[in-house]
Each structure stands twice: as structure tokens, then as C-alpha cells.
Image (cartoon, rainbow, N blue to C red):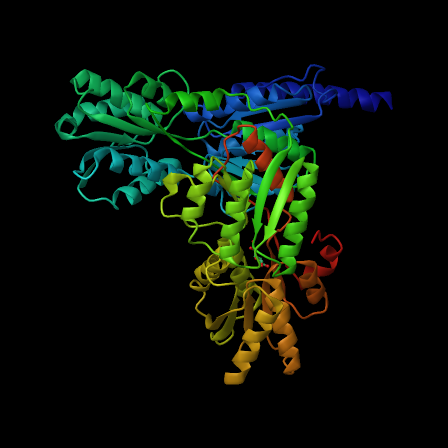
Length: 631
Ligand code: GZL
């Protein structure tokens, strides 16, 4: 017995030495566990796989992760540097697994090449937080990153305002076309600029995203630069190169520079704005604090961890640079005080809604939040009244689940004028001008993805046969974001599959009777020739099933029925063999919402969007899951 242990011990020591050498040689930053390799005294090890350590943003992320982790005695962080190579990043991940990591944080080198490896780790049971660059699909625990399209759009909108009616000439310094974030920022920038007249873009291509490349190109393109009003570039280090070149050319006072990144280090975005060398920068939030915050929740098996957190970016210029620096450096402490919240809820139209309301009411108590909820019975007017009453009451935060997407600008401006932040819960709104920041964050599902998932299930489970499968679409209420977006996602995948088509579409208002009415009215005017029903929620699907059976049409046999929400009632219908598939839309967002409210009131910057985690279920798994359903 001793011999076996002794041999094992030797193997372990040799392995540990090899691993340490490999990681050190490979540019890893190994933090030895004090007692020689075992995890005694350390509750969890967080492995961090960084794409490279060349870019400031990535160094800043590692530093932020380390700063946050250092606050916890029993957490260790082990970082690796893939030096830009996907092959090495895969090897790094295997090393981290061998080291016994409990959770992986990864910023992928190459989203496409790393997707499979991330899925492999996730499927093995190790939680995975993907940062900055999102891989395709949802085979990871949580994604945290900026919206680079929005960052580019914000820069474009700022430049339009800067140039005003007269317009002007803008030199655009472009870097490496393989850079995903650069491409997305340029795309967002151009999508904003094209909305204005009189702005001439002069695109200058550098081939590299570096300070020196930017310096060289500005010097080389001096003839164009001399005539320009603004230089736009999408990273701090390129902006610094452009600043130095303008100084060299004596053009600093003539040509302005606007960039993206807005990091807080010396000679980075915020500092360059403070120095007056940069007109404005659009901040690219790093997310390290959020990543460790959520990593601890995941390691502690806490409920309410979302699927995606899209971080907020801000325009920073001379006018608000101090305010932004104070916010970034502020230590956001939740003092635990009671917070008063006014919640305008859509109504009581569905089982989903009832579960949603219950989750919110129960969580409010757990988070020491005084909740004042008004039910609007699917009336926007009643929601307006509720919001105005909350403003009058002087609540700390207003939360709205809007019955429809549009028409909210005026009442949201009233809340903003009263200094009361508004969170959009479950559904979002479309406002005239996003830069007004009338809402603080959106917490809910990705309805477009839900629609895609529904049609993907149809594609994979309902054979197109002779290529003319007829679909009936039962929609929610007119103008609601789930109605519009589930329809959009469904049709996106439908367009890729010509063997199916939507031959009939009608509104059912997300209610049981509404779904029943759609089927009844169809049968009053048509012979039944529908192969598939896509119902945008369970209640309408169950109403449709009731009507089909009343006409002797067998649900799931004569017609496949796909629904969204995945309530217990839907699982019961799948177990009965009537409903074919339920795409989950999780109403249990109370914990996430209350955490967001407490974070907001403690001074944390709120993400643009917090997207809930959801799956797809069908009859093959319904029995296994029905007893686990929370709603
Ligand atoms: C979706 C939610 C929808 C549900 C319906 O987040 O707004 O409204 O899918 C509910 O059941 O009525």
C-alpha cells in the first residue's frame, strides 16, 4: 500500500514540475498553491485562458481578474497566454484541466476554432465564462462582453453631432481586418455615419492595430489629414499613434481625434481626453469584476446566473471625463438599505406571466426590496398611469415589463427628469434615440434566438417530405417585443429551409382563448391542411390543442405543435403526447432582477443587456424534466 502511494506521489511531483515548466515556458503566469500542488486550503481554482497578452485590453482584463480574485482567500487564479495561437490556447486549456481548475474564463483567439473546445469543456461539467468574443451557439455557462457594433455607432453619432449641419471630412484609420472587434466597431461606426449627410469618409488601411502603424499612416496620409476635421480609429493604442503624428505635423489644434476603448491607464483613452489630445473616446468595458462576481455565483451554485451580460459603453469627453473616472474608481458597496421599487407588470394573461410575477415578488423579499407592483391587464395606458404614480411616490427604481415596444419615450423622459432609473424587465422597448439613455438595462430573454430554436427543431424533427409543409403561426399580442422578435427569429431559419412555409399567421394575444380562436377561425374558412403549428407561447398552444381535438384533429399526430415558454402545463401536454416541443423562455428572473437593482443602487454601472439562460425540450425528455420544473 505504501509503495503504491509512494509511486503515485513521485508521479504527481514529476507531473507538477513538468506542468509548471510547460506553463512558465508557454508564457503562463503560474501562482503556486502554497502546499506543493494539492488544493488544500483553496476552495476553487479559476483557470483563465487569454488569447494574447499583446493588446492593452487583454492585459487590463487579466489585471482586473487578479485584483478581484485577490479579495478572496480561498480562490486561486491561474492564467495562460495563448500568444494569439488557437492551437496553443487549446493546449493551455488542457493544461488548466490537468491542473484541476474548477471554472474556466476564456477570451478566445478565434471564435470559430475555439467553439468546439469550449463546448467540450462545458459538456465535461466545468463551468465556462466566455469573455469579449462570443462563440457561436450557447454551449457555455455565461458570456460577458461589450457590444462592439454599439461602440462604433456611439462614436459615429458623436462625430455627427461634433460636425453638425455643415458635415466635414473624417479620416478612418483601419487596422487588422481579422480583428473581430475592429470589424464590428467599424461596421457600427459606418452604420451611424451613413445616416448623416455631408460627411466624407477617407478610409486609410494600416494592416496592423498598433500605435506605430497608426503613426506611420497619419504621416504618410498627411495630404488627406491636413484637409480633415476628424480622425476616427477604434483603439486607444492606434489613437495614441495618431496623436503623436498630429503633433509631429503641427496639426493637433486643427484635427480632432475620436477613438474607442477608453482605458484608464497612462496615455490611454481617458488620459488622452484629460490631456486634451483626444476629443472623445467610447469606453470598452473590461468586465473582469463582473466575471469574478458571476464566477463565484456559479461556483456557489447560486440561481439566477444569466446566459449573456452585454456591458455598457459610454462616450467620454472633456465634459464628463472626471465623472467617468470617479465612477470607474468608486468602490461600489451595497449598504443593504431597503430599496423602494415600482414595478409595472404587463398583466395576468398567461401561466408564464403568473410565474414571472411570483418570482419577482418572492425575490423582492429576499433582497430587502419594498416592491410596489401594478398589474396593467395588457393596457399600455394603465402602465403609463402606474409609472407616473411611481414617480409621484418617489421610488428609488422603476421596473417595466412593457406590453408593447413603442410609445414609451415621453413617460421615460418624465422618469429621467425625476432622476429615477428605469429597468426593462422581460420585454424591451424601442426608443427614438438610444443616446438619451432613457432605460438603464434590459433583463430578459433573447426572443429572436427563441424563434430560431423553434424553427431549428422543426427543421431537425419534421421531415420536409415533398417540400411543401404548411405552417400556422399563432402570434402573441400586436407590437410586443416577444411577438415581433420570435417571429423574426423563426422566419430567419425558415428562409434557409425552403421545404416549409408559413401559410397562415394570426394573433392570439398570448392567451388560451386566443390560441383556440385562431384555430377555430381557420377551420371556419379552410379545410385543415396545416402540418405544423408554431405558437409563440404555451397558453395559445394549449388553446389550439383544445380546438383541434374538438374537431377530431390529433395533435402531434396530424399536426406537430411547437410552443415557447416551457411551463409545467407544456410539459404535461408533451407527456400526454399532444405538444411536440417547448422552447424555454425563463420567467424566473426575480433573483437576477433584484441583484441588478441592488447593484444599480450601490453605484455599479449596469450592463446594456442581461440575457437569461434557456433550453429546448421535446417529448423525448419531457418525463425526465417535468418534476424539475420551477414554473
Ligand atoms: C416573454 C413574455 C411572454 C411569454 C408569454 O418574455 O413576455 O409574455 O412568452 C407572456 O407567455 O404572456
